[in-house]
Amino acid sequence: MQTKPFRIGTRGSPLALAQAHETRARLMAAHGLPEDMFEIVVLSTKGDRITDRSLALIGGKGLFTEEIEAQLSSGELDFAVHSSKDMPTKLPDGLYLSAFLPREDMRDAFIGRSAARLLDLPEGATVGSASLRRQALIKRLRPDLNVIVFRGQVETRLAKLAEGQADATLLAYAGLKRLGKLDVPTEILDPVSFPPAPAQGAIGIESRIGDARIDALLSAIDDRPTRAAVSCERGFLGTLDGSCRTPIAGYATVEGDDLQFRGMILTPDGSQFHEIETSGPVSDAERLGSAAGQAIRDKARADFFESWG
Image 1 (cartoon, rainbow, N blue to C red):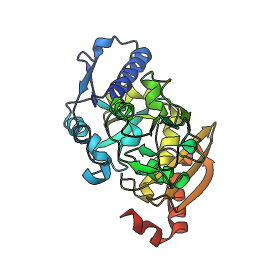
Image 2 (image 1 turned 60 degrees about the horizontal axis):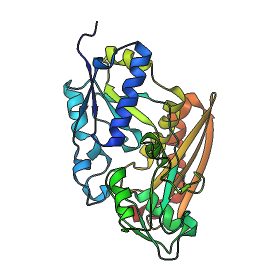
Image 3 (image 1 turned 90 degrees about the vertical axis):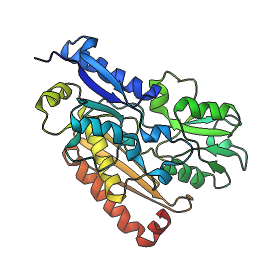
Image 4 (image 1 turned 135 degrees about the vertical axis):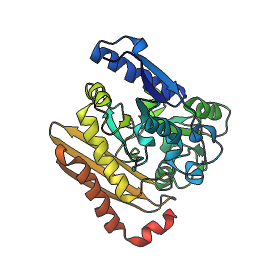
């Protein structure tokens, strides 16, 4: 019988803490356990500490997970809570994504100062975003706009916007909802014309492979439709590259035993793009995503990817 608290690893941002608290609350409800049976361990990651450069320049998504995964591998943590879109497609040996909470809204939120909608921004307006996907999608729809790098936590980016460093910015709607900032977005972007990052809006839980005790604990809160959708999206991402140096978008929706997926790849300047749609059984989720990634790669041909560096 468990006598010591389960140790939950997380980053220290308000959003990361909200996600860890939601995970703890679901586990308490599922197992009838008191709050003191869960210890939330906050770790600072390199991605949190370096905020003046884009992720593409400093090493990619693993910068948000490296320190946490080291303690997970060593046994200092029992499991870790992440934003699934921040997870590299290849995880350290011995670790895996063992559970997913029910997915929040996957769409991007537009926050405008000089206009309420992206398409209504004045010509030459400045939009702040650190995401290469968002930058490329903005330029695809509005090549006249000036896009600058905006990094930092949600509150930091909103403060930069309020200071007038940009006319608009974009954030994940799921994060704003989890932080209770429903009044912040001025437009929720259509996922067909402005597709989200793979796994956006999904909280993923990472643990050690073969840890039966933790697997049993987490299986009670694992949301199967979210698992299927994210598996498909990560399959697409992994086949194409999956670093923060590439503009890749895609999302899957699950209805019963059926899964539908839409994916897009773009050149960084948004001038060229390729889209793909596929569907199939939920049981084939990861294979469907991987096959879509290979099909869109074949469609785009090698010269398209030269711009990805």
